[in-house]
Structures are given as structure tokens and as C-alpha cells.
Length: 269
Image (tube, rainbow, N blue to C red):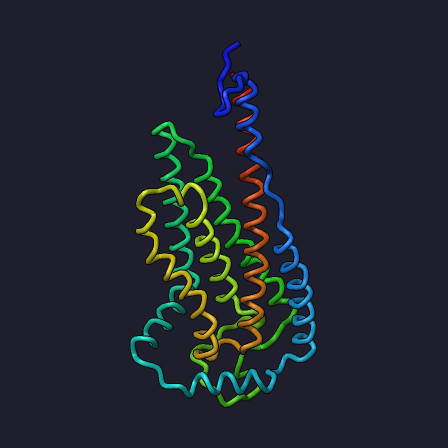
């Protein structure tokens, strides 16, 4: 049996060295800070949903916030960006964008496989991104039906409503979608193996846009009279909770699959 020598000059067998390397991969579990955020977040979202269900009319601060935001005159460039962010997250553009990311991640996976490099992480990322966005939409739909809050303008409020969408208002679907969608893309852009990519700096404009989109989408929903402030805040919270859960699941499943593959390779060797 062959042996290797560590920096201290102590001989170790190849099997021992392989086991040591294998032990470096551990299954990632939820961190305490993640649990601390998630549990109170679910409680707050549940309580807010119940309160809004039994008081569907806008609260005083809801109406005041909308009136204030709609009365502010913004620079044309800022207004154009806000409108672009809002339009980009309509159903058809958002589905097309998601399809492009799916095809891109899968294509990268096949390129890595053709070059004999680890490719599973790219396919896992594609599946995780689709699952995150799709289930976030499902969660929003369920809460939306259960809370059954009418859209702004339904009670005769004197505000600007650009379009009357025939669905309920709480929570904001655009906001929840953006937090889950762009939040998961941001997470992937800072995770392995992207951090090791020599041209990762080209992603900086996309990362900046993702952050600006998440920050702007809530403002745009109020500006356009589509949602109240409480709808938007609930969208941010529900999106953040689901994003956190998906990141924890993705991290745990990816580390488990990596460990299983390494164990299988070690057994075959």
C-alpha cells in the first residue's frame, strides 16, 4: 500500500489521506441565526395575514404612504427605471427571463461535463432556481386567496391606480417574486464555483441590478397604486422567508450529494 508524508514528516496511507479529504465535506445544516430569523418571521407573517384578513381596508399609514409617494416628483430617469423594473416583473417577461437563466445554467453544466469537470452543481442550481421561483409563486397565491384583501381603490380611496388587476392584494406578488428570484441568483453568484471563476467581475453589473431591483420593486408597487405598504412589507417578508428556506435546502442537499459522490468514488477506487 502506498503512503504519503504530511508536512510534519509523518507517513500516512493513501486511504487515510483520502478519508481525511472526504471528511472535509460535511452536510450543511441550518445555522442558528437562520433559525432565529425564520421562526419569528413566520409568526409575524401569520399574525399580519390574520389582521389584514379581518381588516381588509387600508390602514391610515397605508393611505398616507401611497399619497406621499404618488405626490413626489421624481427625475425622469428614475421614473423610467422604476417603470422598467415593474414591467420586467410582469408574467411574460419574468417567465422569459427565468427560461434564459435555466437554459444558461444547463448549458454551462453540459460544457463542464464535456470538459471532464464537475458539472452536477450547475444542474442543481438550475433546478433550485426554478423551484425557488415556482414555489414562491404558489405560496403567494395561497396567502393571497386566504387573506382575500381587495386591491387599492376598492373602497373609494382617492389615489392613482394605473391598472385594476383582478386578484387580491396581500401580499405583493411582484415583491415576493423579486426577493426569491433575484435573491437566489445573488446567492448563486457568490457561491462555489462562481467565486473561483476568473471572470466573475463581469457579474458585478448584474449583481448591482439585482439589488436595485429588490429595493425598487416595493416602491414601484405603491407608486403605481397596485399595493398598499402592508402588502409590500408582507411581500418582502414572505419572499425573504422562502428564499432563506431554499438556500438552506439547496446548501444541505448540495453538500449531501457531494459527500455521497465522493464516498462512492472512494469505494470504487
